[in-house]
Image (cartoon, rainbow over all chains, first blue to last red; front, side, top):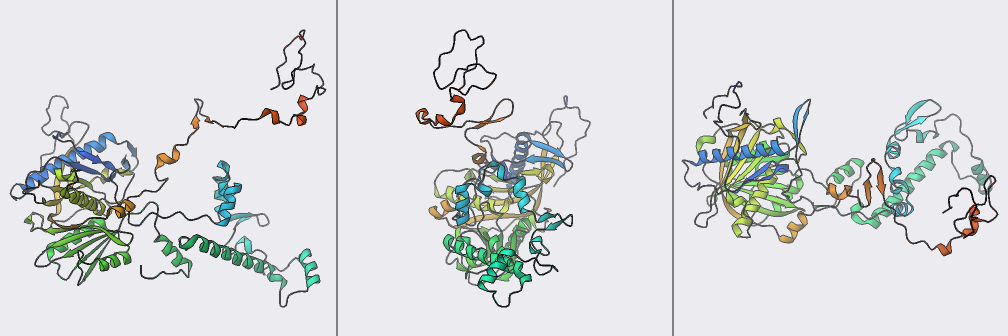
Length: 223
Length: 330
């Protein structure tokens, strides 16, 4: 491959004529899909059965194509310059390619979802219900008044396990005492672990609901 | 897949969930494998595609007996499913069809369409040349030849549009919204000659490295250096996609179009920059209004410090010698 001599940077722009043109003109214009960095040259490519000229022809067509593609990119797309360099923004693609898996079918709403949608609760509440409030609810940190620190809401050493069996003092619940006196205490129950039992019961109830939702929603809700 | 796997741990549940269909899909993975005979030119095709599509491709090295895509696709479908690949490039060589590369696309666990390309003996120009292309570089692609732009319904046009779509799927890479100008480094050219004697024209694949030089004008002068191997293919057998299945595969989800989401009817910005919308109310039956609970409407309900006022609802005589006009209560 012969190297073309590099042009001097001191070339006066006006007087010297272009030895090498920067634009490409063809009988049928190129079509572009810049989202794929794709250019199509619909001009008939001369017969390729004979090998002798082939590579040269291919190379010159390729050069023209690359030139017009780069021209198109640099002239039509907005360029932003940042610390890393110049960035071009690309449009969404026009040639669509087939998917690999079929489109996911929308899941039927769970019982709570249908209720909340009707009442306008939670994420269905309206414009004000998202944003900062939603983020707060998702984060795992809660401000603990007593220690003055941020503790985890759930998980290992989370605040939801506060009272369970690790306090040296367990307060008795008045109402529960009364009902126990009435009905009699179930055997082998330790008052200390009351909190943990309630949490486990809640978890089991939730899993039950999820299973029932999965049954109603079908296999789509399997994971 | 073979059997329905029920997740027993959160980890496996996550893995299964990641295999579910997504509204916007990631880039397809390519599976590259070959049959009992894989001569060097064929192997170089597989290796080149693997280098260009890394890490989104899987190159299997063992030979696979008894796979004939145009007779039975089951084993290829199974392998593609196991390796989670949407594209399969199968290389095989026999006496009748030497150096054959078959490219298949998978949709919903089944083969969508496939094309057999037979490698022709290449000129030695490309032997042993390296492909200096980094990982995940996006290529510029050029399709040259009238056959690529042909939108007629002739058989040849349909075949070549399928070939074009397949090549795009394999080589085009990740869809990106913006690209660094430095990243426009190499060009893949796919050229097809003119159909002569009703025969399908040959397809030539070439890779070039792009060099830009100052031209004294705003746009640079582009020069190309040939890199990598050269491939010339003859188009062989094809299997087109079933129209209904293809339609399913081309479906786009709702709400993926940004325009669709942002265009909210009835809401606009006024000149000051406030968000303005119109609230449409139905017609109010004024006869049904409960006026008894509206204290301001009562005759004797004049507030201290105010003179007799004209009430909005009740038609009262306004005394003519009222010094100032009080605003009517609506």
